[in-house]
Length: 162
Image (tube, rainbow, N blue to C red):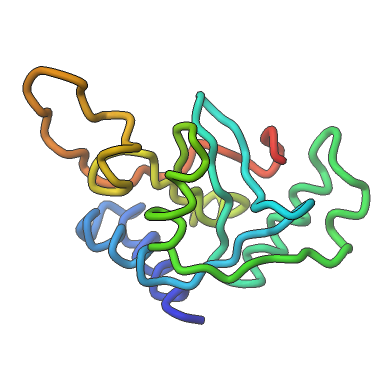
């Protein structure tokens, strides 16, 4: 599916301490990921002052999220069995168009129901454009770029999703 399998492989490498974080970001940009759609908008979760777009590398990963979501307090009882509408989007579109359009600090969380395969791509330089990155100083010297995406300990299937 449009590089999403390769993205999952690169995430596994990075979580094992291997691979180049920049290559991982490049793989997200190239990958076609699945983003659930609910009430006409993309599924997001709020955590730590960041709005996270929840993306999945394949339908199986989305199904694991649906099962986990069905167990979360306040979720729909049929989340595990209902049909989930989703948009198939390139990661580049998420990072370059949708994240800036949200108007709040936002990043992309991939495969959040997979404890060993989740990865967060936070709104920092090198991942999102500088005009929406939260680590760009307003004045003074420019700090070095971040070391790349972080293993997701961020949004979970039980997060404040909308």
